[in-house]
Length: 208
View 1 (cartoon, rainbow, N blue to C red):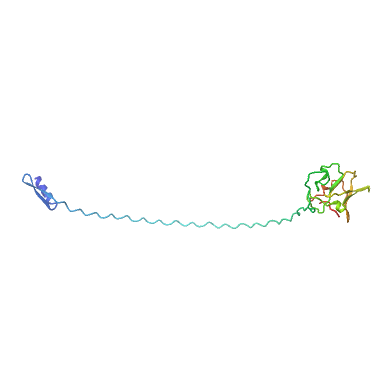
View 2: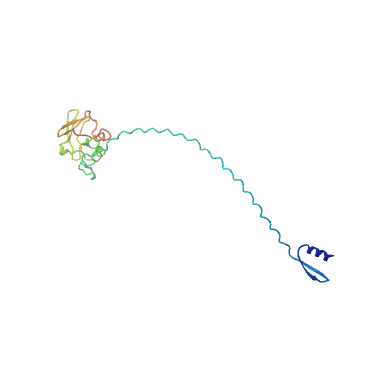
């Protein structure tokens, strides 16, 4: 019964190769079945939906222009730079010849001077610049006291003058020159002339 069923099953599978089998039966060897049909390729997935672009940003409000600044006030011209008219400067220390430190306040070192100073050609000449050449121009300082007594003080080649003679202040002071003389309008109460006669104050002592 089992053999019959096997034969039926095998024969049903296609062409058979029948061979004798022990016990009077036959072993039926079936040929291989036909190759199965290949499966069709799977359907590819659909492409995703493209994303939409974002909403463009709008520009901010334009800033307003700042208020233009007004120009600064124009400066006035400064005082002209000091010029040494003689072109000579003191530079050899403090020799005891009266040629040193022209334009300086003499009384700051020479406490015995009763009248001193420097005569210049220009009102704003710098410290240390030699003043007028007194001997070359017969230049000297005239002093007239209130009691009408007076005298003169020579001006040296650096423009310096000084004296230790007693003076009773106030006095009238002037400068004499080869072509005349000039006096201050007001009397003076002290004899350190370069204290006031500096470029930043009353200006240098000038000849007529």
